[in-house]
Image (cartoon, rainbow, N blue to C red; front, side):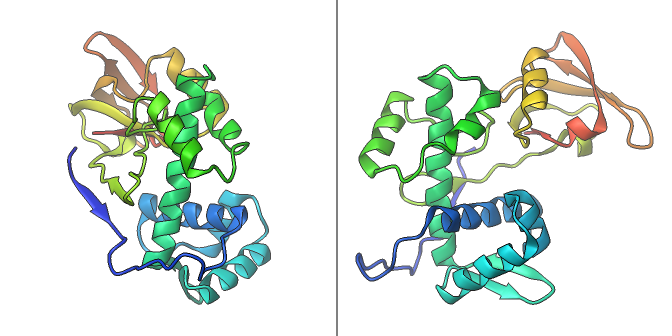
Length: 235
C-alpha cells in the first residue's frame, strides 16, 4: 500500500502564537479522527462521548471550546468535523499513541492486548523521546493492532480494506488490522492466530448474519462469529 494523503497544506504554524493543547483536547481530536476514519461523515456528539467515556454535556462543552479555537466545525444535530488544523493535531496525537503501543510490545514485551491501556500512561512525550522510541522499534508503519502510524510530516497511509463480516465468500487476502481494544478479544484472536499480516480465505458464511468459516494460512480453519468478524479488517 503506497498511497498516502496529507491534510497539512495551507496550514502555516507560527510557534508561540497558539496556546498548547491539553491532553484531553488532543484525545478528543484523535477520537474524532478515528470515528470519521471508520464511518465517514460528521461525528455524532453522543458517539464521541460514548467512546471517550464522558457524558454528552461534557463532550458538547469540550467541542464548543475546540470549535472556538479553530480545531473543529460543528453542525447542530448532525455532528462534528475536524478542520485542517484539527486533523494536524489529531494525527500528532495518534502518531504518539501508536508509537508508544509499538514500543510497549516490541521493546517492553507487553502483550498486544495490553498496549492500548498502558499507552495512556505515556503523555506529553518530547520529540526526542518519540524519535528514540521510533528508532528502537525499527521505524514501524503500523501499530500492534495493524493501524497505520502517521509519519512525522503529517501523512498517513490509506488502507484499502474492509471488515471480514462484509467481504464475499471466496475472498483471499490478509488481515490488515483489528478494530478492537478488548483484552479478551485480542487474547482470543492471538490464540487462533488471527492477527495482522496473517493470510486468510473466507470459506463460507451462514445466512442471517451467522458465523463465518475462515481458512488461516491455507491450512487451519476457524469459525468466527459475526460480532468478532466486524472487528477483523481484511485487505
